[in-house]
Image 1: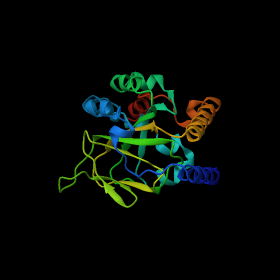
Image 2 (image 1 turned 30 degrees about the vertical axis):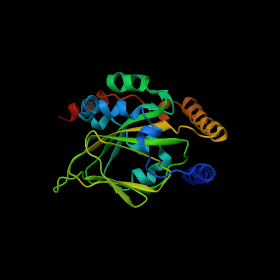
Image 3 (image 1 turned 180 degrees about the vertical axis):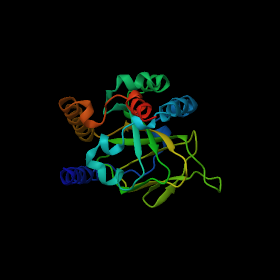
Image 4 (image 1 turned 60 degrees about the vertical axis):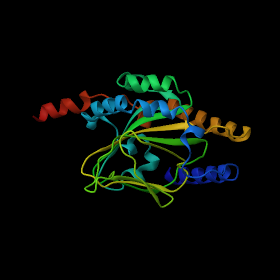
Length: 247
């Protein structure tokens, strides 16, 4: 399955790369102006993410969400967990109910395809990799970004060998088809809001292909069921009950 995914992703990158020529990091106001709404409410989003962190064991690991990417998520002993509110246009209603601020923002921003809180464990390294296609862009908003001993953000996103460090309330819009990796050097969990948004102003053929790809993913999720894609609802009882039993 991984080999099939890798070949398909490589083919898509080639097709899009022949038609779309933009840099790795993009201007927010030009490509995702609605991102300013999310930035303005980062403290509300942070509060919601911190509440979810209290029951971190109930949040699925990334490899449970996307088994094809197990090689980058389960590459070491440290976790990378994601709380999904929306995936490829499909809303996870129960999870959204736990994040009213995020839900409000998503209703105001129909160009957002996917939304999740990303929890990166202390010491976690997500090795160098590339996303599959340029029809969507990646938006990162720092919500709880631990600092190193020198006072700078200890979580580093490296894109095309260029390091990017954002702190709480700062954001970055970028194209994840470029080679990138992430490392959390801190001894605390790093939390970020991650959005996938439609790339604006694509040519008609690229826009059609992008929507076809997303539609096929949606059909796969509906056919196999959300749980098989790691989209099961967040259930704190799933981690609390066994813990209580042990105690």
